[in-house]
Length: 333
Ligand SMILES: NC(=O)c1ccc[n+]([C@@H]2O[C@H](COP(=O)([O-])OP(=O)(O)OC[C@H]3O[C@@H](n4cnc5c(N)ncnc54)[C@H](O)[C@@H]3O)[C@@H](O)[C@H]2O)c1
Ligand SMILES: *[C@@H]1O[C@H](CO)[C@@H](O)[C@H](O)[C@H]1NC(C)=O
Ligand SMILES: *[C@@H]1O[C@H](CO)[C@@H](O)[C@H](O)[C@H]1NC(C)=O
Image (cartoon, rainbow, N blue to C red; front, top):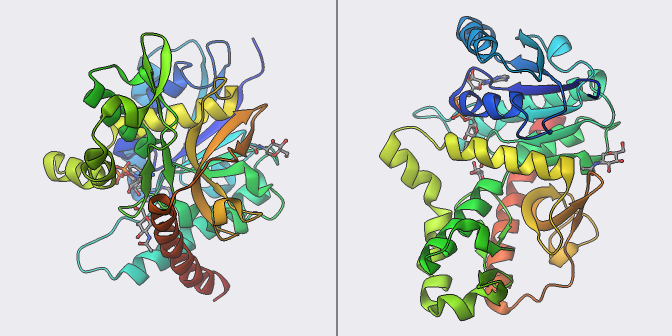
């Protein structure tokens, strides 16, 4: 058994965390022989609720869980971290202006980025989930100048999994037979779920999704809007936002960072853009197809992009540029 790693989950009293803490603590993400210290951060008023979560984690009697540290203090929450999963953010309240919401989140992620810089290990892997995830991630990364920007990513794996599953269901197959869907851009309704490089396994052979589905109108129409609007559809039905599937996606994302992606497969995550990859403006957190090896991601290069894809990739990029410009103003104010 190796030394325990220290894993922070923020928003730890919330509903995503409630589905997330168990699989992490039982070894689904970092491996069955990796002991874990869980640090649970939430805001002061939620501490009584968090106590209940701690009791339940204790009652799970999990062999890998060495310690649980509930806190509302940054200097405790961010100390010596190996991993930080930032789920908590300011939710939209009725009548709240978009700008005010963004301003509140910039304040949270500026403070948490600074706390990572000050207290966490320099090798910490940071995953931002709380919305607006891409921009919150960018603000946290900018506020932690001594941690490499490559160690920050945001969650678009839920969108990726949604796309994968939609194609699989259409083909009457299980999701593991579908690989290499791509989510480009922002985690919002302008994201572009792209299946031009997606492969479907038919009797042991990988075939292009377009050839297997044989319904271009669906792949270029309803498929895209279903994935883009899935979050809203879940809220409408459940009266709560996606939590079980978000937690599963967080586990997939972090496990891939920890142990790497399979040969011949890529996954989607929001990462720091530099070097004008696929014509995406630099200095954004934008969702790209990536492979991961030795805890280092690399954008998959050389994929052909047609005009249909280009327009959609640009639209979601310009949304992010606009949001970045506003947040950077708040950051320096
Ligand atoms: N990127 C994605 O794919 C994705 C998917 C689903 C949900 N989300 C986002 O994840 C976030 C959490 O969702 P949820 O359903 O768990 O919400 P929730 O409201 O149930 O829980 C959020 C928790 O965060 C806490 N919190 C708020 N500000 C905090 C701060 N500054 N520090 C620490 N904790 C803080 C709250 O007190 C609350 O306990 C939301 O922003 C949601 O929009 C993202
Ligand atoms: C980008 O996506 C996030 C997450 O859904 C959303 O909150 C934000 O408003 C989007 N950005 C813009 C500029 O629309
Ligand atoms: C994080 O930074 C370290 C250097 O501190 C580097 O070795 C590692 O590859 C980075 N991780 C990711 C996911 O890029």
